[in-house]
Length: 343
Image (cartoon, rainbow, N blue to C red; front, top):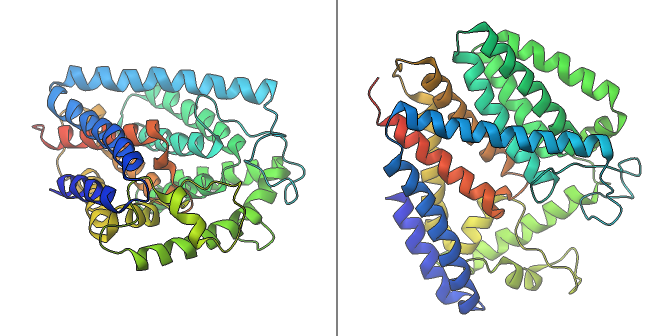
């Protein structure tokens, strides 16, 4: 039902878009892809072998993504012509990796999801050798995450690991403190990035706050149908009080909650996040114990992965990226599959 309400509200929002033709084209291309991805998983993944094949596919792709990320660390990525760094605030920051993803923030959000799924397996698998391999992958993924210098994603995974460590395993908390302290001590640029996160001198943070204020005003002016699917970049200039530059195009609100509610209305936004948080709760609160540790670890990892999406979404609209949204819909579909399986 939440998916249906979200889809209907998104379609209805097309009627009030400044450019209905663009919004409709964007809507049916994206929403159809997301829902088809969800249906393909829920209707075709049946057996444990199907689940294992999907997990292996995710694992092999993760290896390639991490390998390319490490390649960028070694051989360098010049950020001089890229708009991912505030050169005035962070003159020392010359490199941010993004691997096969669109930019460092999107890559960092993917790494958070990957670390969470790996943590689920690490917590539930019994075999010591497998746990050691998974632990090594977590360290590599965490290193790549640090090299993205994406502050929101680093903070999100720190909150998740700290919360899990406090509630379930104190060793995870101790490892987080040790690794985090070492990373900050060894990388002064990372330390500067993290400590300046809430500084008014950081134009990135300042711009986000200004955008959120403008987006809230959009929601207040268009609470029912929103401003139109995908129309943020067309409507924002009328509410812009920060950049005021016609040559700059801002395509999303840097916040998934404000962005969805702004574009498809309050009801559509509530429906979307009911689906997202409902899937999260199913994964994290299930009381069933599967007959294989892999399924137990996968369910926990998927729940934590959605927590990372929810936290990352506070400071960035990581779901604006199409592959990221497809991955989210696939993971939520997999939660449905696991929830319907017999123990």
